[in-house]
Length: 574
Image (cartoon, one colour):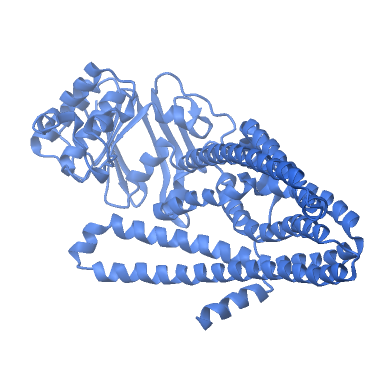
């Protein structure tokens, strides 16, 4: 326990600056607030009404004690109590609708931010996903929940609290100006306490979020590789990895809780000391006969409205720190350049892709050279085999054609347009890829097939299933096309997954069909079917086949042999 306390104290005393609030980050929230301004306005107005209803209550209490109870006026006592009950009932109803409107406002804004953030992440370049794991990203997306503070009643309550502060201060001076001056002397203590703990809270909040994201990344990594874990009997090792991250996160969570709890108690102590000082001076004045009991009751009621907003602002300053951290971390994703952002022209490709040309293309993954001095031309109806050993650059060429990476050296032309000037979404609509590593969503077979063309009609789907060879295994399933494939398609074989992928490509009816080691999991009959598709069904399209094994397709008219990232030989056939 002492270890946690020492670490918490160390954080509060640290001279290291935490991440400060950036106005640029706040601009991110403005459009979302504008879109829901009516709910925000309704909640704010109702909150103001609640505050105004609460203002007269302490003075009414003074009147009841001094002018009704001490005067023994039972009739007025009944009326005064009825008035207080009515005020409380109206406050209850108004408070309910205040919470209702702010809850709607909060949820609508957060859902919209999450949606836009997810959409933006999906549109980030592939290089971003190559260096960022899925589990880490999921945790970062969940950090949007930390923005709730900005859309809660706290900020509005702060503004209304200022009004309450001013009104209460005026009434307090009217009731007992000397006692009011004494009460005001306590207020600066709230500011110093907030300033003392804010930096530590900000630093620890960021630490908790980052360690939570790292833990999520490790869990996702262990679960994704569960097959390997079981094969090597590594369950204990993976559990120990998670345990280390859990312990690390636990320490940070405890530090955050210690700072939050201790600072909260300090605020309460300051408020209590203020109350004790008022009790001492007020009691002294009552004994001397210069202050009434009713006046003292009213004074303490309004003092709560003086210290209340002050204490709330101080506590809000601490509660604000995790939200500042969350906002800055969420803003980081909105600041990352998206795939389309660097494209000034974003030309839509022609209706049909008739030509793909590489001109002295050089590409590297960081410092690692992938391909260099690549020159070739592929025309409509060409059936091209790109072959070569592992690491020769085959997959890199395909990724460049799809626009997954931007060409910096050399040129890739689609028809007559430089690929970096084209709209990526429009380009990819014209290209289909049947890959060796097929990813299927945890959905039905049908939904995985129509993913390439959601608006496809039943006859189009049936044709794609038949041509791909998928029909033979689908008809044997109890639920046929409605069969769930499981996570990443685990419930079906590799060959069946590739047939679904081929059906997806057929259904899309693209100008360019790329088979990336698509025959690796297929038997001889299935390979013949693919070759037949290339020769007949795709005869008017550009077909690019990547394979290590010989291809018997008669319609192959070009073979590009790669070695060490360069073209070793191009064989043209008639």
